[in-house]
Length: 351
Ligand SMILES: [Fe+2]
Image (cartoon, rainbow, N blue to C red; front, side, top):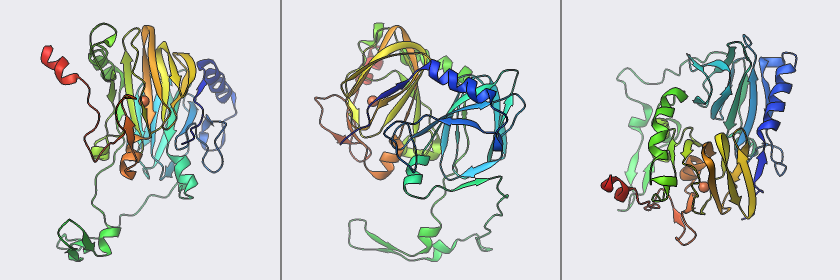
């Protein structure tokens, strides 16, 4: 596997771009937005990783964006200022370090609040959809009429379609109606307010004692969206995790087929990724794990806080999520065999 070189964009570079966006005349559709594009990216679908689009967005106080609907799904983090999003008919406000998702095909619109420009990072699976020539985007869409499909008895056409066992191992024949009316799992926009989430981060930071030395896992929480079920995502394509690392904590080198992008929002540290060495600090964003590149991260003297976005649920859905938790372990395919184990059971038993 060839991987894109890891790449760091500094906080100063992001700030300069946010300032440039804030100075623009109100653009069409109200979107003050720039993509952060890796030099290896090619059209269609420009990402910071091959399947992950990252954009920096600015909302001026009182300004709002045009309504939009698209079949890509998104996750965002507010870097500073205040804004609100109306999505799927609900409106919620956000402030610094809040994280939210925007489900595919939900109409959404942003608005700036407060006195200062609001800045947020947005991650989307648009590059993959664009490569597939399957990215649907509608600006200022019409409201959709419901597809009133079920009959008076409440039955669906698929309840009448064939479902025939073939052999004894689970293979089946299903009628066409099963393809066009799949089981529904509600998909909603969710907000993880920083004020609430921050209260818990000390728990993961504290695992393993001083500098986390006794713990073999990672000091983070997944921002879980139940719509993603066993794929453990924040969107159907990506997980977002918030990590809080104790000072001088060093991770064990590992690798995975999912690609990861780290945004550092507190502290500092260093990484070795595919043989490249990096130092980073609060405000920087980094392609921190191109697929299958061996990498490890280490927190600096004040620890660090990191938002990681990784296309992990997408790989689980494709049965392509392979993982090597340490370079001595064998490669496991997560989701259909037992995955890697940490020593958490022993730590919890001791506490
Ligand atoms: Fe990793």
